[in-house]
Image (cartoon, rainbow, N blue to C red; front, side, top):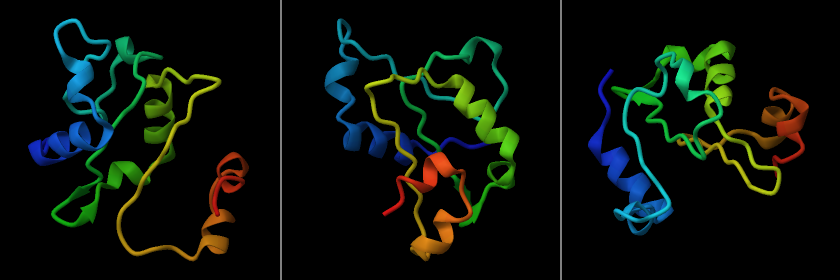
Length: 110
């Protein structure tokens, strides 16, 4: 699967990662295929940025629940932290969308 360098650069810019990546910085950015199974990834990552589309179409793997379960296992969830999922594309009808996601997520849709 191709990893689009533009997505990597934009994520670094948007999240202000460059300053944290310095040699003695607090952050290490790993690039690779986040959708490949990796036993050593469990609880390791503070953030995962995905390029969710290939040729303008959502990757079929991202429509499978087990993919999101595996991505969740890779996250180092912080009780006081905030975790986000940002999607692009046409805006959904929020009430309808809230009814389609797990209750923990639907409470955050506004």
